Image (cartoon, rainbow, N blue to C red; front, side, top):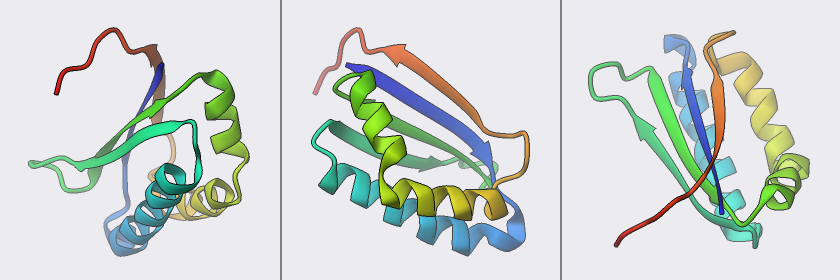
Length: 100
């Protein structure tokens, strides 16, 4: 399993547009991509313009498929407008364990 963590900041005047775009992308990713096991979007309590996504994919091929999906292209268009340039940090890691 490959975890993708995304951390970013959003322009205040684009917050509603961002929320709509990421919800659409996250739902389509989870519902339509067999290789996606979860896609959680979190909003910082102290800084409501800071977000972290926690995504889990079967493997790197699933991440590549995600990035090639039409809904990801739409998400990137919105992100280009809503996300503060230079604030996005993507981290790929191996999931070691998970508990429920």
